[in-house]
Each structure stands twice: as C-alpha cells, then as structure tokens.
Length: 282
Image (cartoon, rainbow, N blue to C red; front, side, top):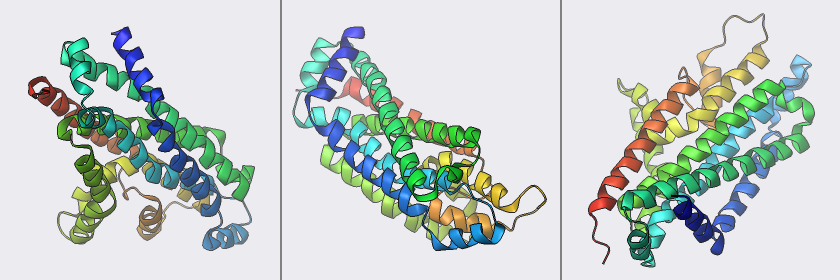
C-alpha cells in the first residue's frame, strides 16, 4: 500500500494540474479576504458600535466556499483523468486489487486537500489582515475554529471529487456537472424551494451542506460579536442576510452540515469503489 501511495504522489507532482488549480485558490482566498473586509455597511457598523468586528471570519467562509470547487475538480481528475489518458489500466494491473488503488488515491488526495485548505486559510487570513487589521479576526480560538472547519471542508470536497470522478470517469462530463451543479442548479433549486413547505430541505443539499461547514460557524460568531453579550435576541433576518452573502443556512449547526456533507462524500466514494471493481478498463 505504501508503494501505491508513493506512486499517487508521484503522479500528482509529475504534472502541473495540482499547482494550476492551486493558483485560483490563492487569488480567490486573498481577494475575498481583502475585498470582503472593505464592505461599506460593515465599516459603518464598526464605527457605530465603536469596536472592531471579526469580519475576517466571514471572509474566511466566503473564500472557502468559492475555493472548494477547485479542490473538487482536482480530486475528480484523480480517476477521471486516468481514464482519459488510459493510464488507469496500468494502475489497476500493477496495483491489484482495484480497491487498493482507489484507497491509495484517497489517502494521497486527503493530503492534497489539507494542502489546499492550508493555502486557503493562509491567504484568506493575509487578505483580511491587510483589509481589516489584526482586530478583524476576533478571538484566536474563533480564528482557529473557522480555519479548522475550512480545512475539513476542503478535504471533504477533494475526496468527494475523487469518488465522483470514479463514478463518471469522463473528465469533461464530470467537470461540467460539478460546475453547473455548484453554481447554477442548486441555486435555482433553492430559489424554487424558498417559501415552500420543503424549504428546510435546502440545508441538506450537497452545496449548501458543504458551504455550511464553515459559514454556519462563522456567521453566528460574527452576529454574537455584533450583538454583544447584552443582546438576548438577534432578528432572523440578520442571519439570513449574512448567510445569503457568505453561505450556509439559518438555524442549521455547522456540525450538522459537516455530517451531511461527509455522508455525500461517503456515498460517492463507495459508489465509485463499487463501480471501479466491475468496470471494463481495456
């Protein structure tokens, strides 16, 4: 197994895809962290309250929810890319049983997901530091909590991509489906469900659950900082407005989003493993 894992890392670093997809993560994370802290309404609110607000936590969530798609695409091409260039045949023949090959990919891409997550946290924090200063992060424990949840989200999106790529195998179709679903289909579906009896279902959709891992932690922390300890109740509309811009769902705990999205990841990984055992590779 150790040899298969080394082989996977060798495949990853032999081609340029890993850093080509990491570049937009750097740009988006830094841009969201820097420009997100320049929101005029928040600046006015800070002046009104007379104290700094942890806007860096919100921009951390924003950067993560935009950047995870690149981790998912990277994971998708772990298997689908090998089907495209026919190297999957050699991988399966030299790494028999096939499940061991997929297991090695999952381990290697977990490590790459951690790398993507760390880069996201680092550059989002640098951007927020530039835009809001050190006071824009709140308590260090809050920063570690939000950053850690972002790291988990990035790893899970990477592994979901590996499982999805093993299911679909056609790299073009897999990429298009991921992009259309994350940025179009689920948004449209959520709009239709809003105000209906099934509105609560949106929190359990894959994209909303993935975004909620970070946002459902960052938004309540931010609202608590704004309201202060003497405010027992914050209007629901405040939460909903912040969730609209920074992701997540009102009243849905972050750990529930984590478990939901982990469930989707497990379904895709197991499904990809089952199909890969039977698929013709000649």
